[in-house]
Image (cartoon, rainbow, N blue to C red):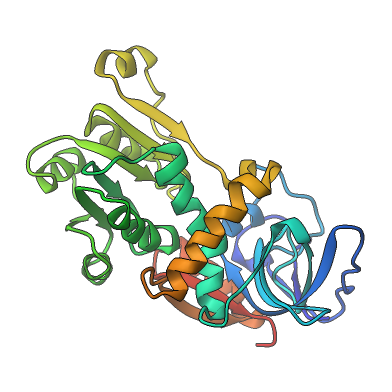
Length: 319
């Protein structure tokens, strides 16, 4: 079958299209998924260069999520242990979720990894309370566009979107953000406080790293929480001073969706059903971006790394 195979770590140039990848075979607790669309995530760019949280092994077919049809005819979206950049993939039944007819492939893929991440950032990590202010970095991205909408739905008092271009900031405003901030400003701490009416902020969802993390942490109010879930700049933030956290009653917590997989019935099934129901009802509107063929996947990774993308990026396994 057609797939993207990696035999050496590196940048987008190591993503190689092949037509002789062996088809997966189902075993206990797993099912073969004929893929209609796969998801492309920023984490994939780290996995390809082996800079992700979990070390990768070669050879490898990347891809952590796909939507398609099972051998018994059900339409499901699934979190994968890899293999999504292909025409077929092996999906664990515990990590597969049936998709209602009112939710299309792109929307389902936006929810299964990025939607679950946004849900847990707000509910599990930051434990958002009504009327609190929320800063969403990369607000036009897959997680960001959903986090903006969910924060409003959960009663946030003020949602502050941070994005790198005027078009991306306008998208965040259209999705319900109260104010949008330019990610490139020199004094981000002051910009965030100004966007919150001169007050420090309660919650920050942060996945950039470097100075963005440092200045976002400095903008936190007492009892504020920064939830850290990525490092897109590939630059580590400053070391966190625990004494300073204590002295200012601030909190920093990391989040990685992989830890939810230890108990999918508790950490995945209920949030995913909520997200699917909200989407089917039209309350939650996942933003679906560009679709790339397998032959174009290197371009997709370059677009992600250069922040040229908006919303959920899709992969057509037959393209």
